Image (cartoon, helix red, strand yellow):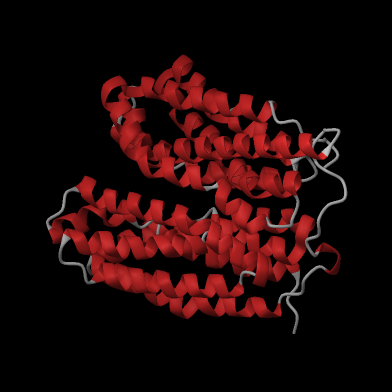
Length: 394
């Protein structure tokens, strides 16, 4: 029985929730108990996670190319197997080097099993009509932290961090693989087979100019994505501390930081509704300004605006997560989407690996004024988006 688009969206959304909860949102809960168990420092454990991000950056273009040729089902199934293997290896770690090896394996899965792979899969199925499915997947997976953090913390309190790793490994085998296996029943859109577009998305007069504009836009887009992931990762790692340095009490800082998740979901709902028919470039331009606006609100209104800061930041970040998938599709087309997406995300993965450390230094030296650094980066990304010369009709 063929699966319709809504069923594919739900299946991939649930599978992505599992993949994010067992990777990005696992380290924050388990870093300290892992460090104590293997006699590693907190920074060393996060260093292993940074190494995983670099591995993911290297794997992304290869996984995308494979998806372009054969679809994403096999790649996503293999990523579930690798996730399970990496988590099982992590559960058996007794030395720091074991933690690095385990996270390197998990990095292979991250590079072939997170948003880029899922988005490439639906583009392979639906071509230029994939935007609603991309938005739906991101909307569902927006609850990964809401599910992952409490569940991992609860299990770690009852049992041990090693049991938590084995639990997530089992879910990849029992839930992740079956969901991705069912993709073989997905019904492609007959009109959405990726073809070379007759009309270019770029306002240019000949092939040479088109090539120059294509490269220029790709570089600008890669820069925007890198800034987006730098700011997002920096906030995920340090937001409670940043809010404390602005004069917010510890409990209030944690409560405010928790509003990032609902803000992200609200942003994705906004993208799914009000901005559904808008060009992704417009959505991205509006969303990238949310973080600087959040900073200004914190500066002018102090700790009373802590929750507003978190919600505004989350709102923009939620929309940008979708724009990372939909903007390249709209501008460059569906042909070669997976491999192109992999290359566009390489700088983002690299800066993301260093983001917690670099922004941590900024917070240590400047306190809440470090937010001006991320805000200026966001403004520079807005300028990059405004300088993209693309046709409004594409």
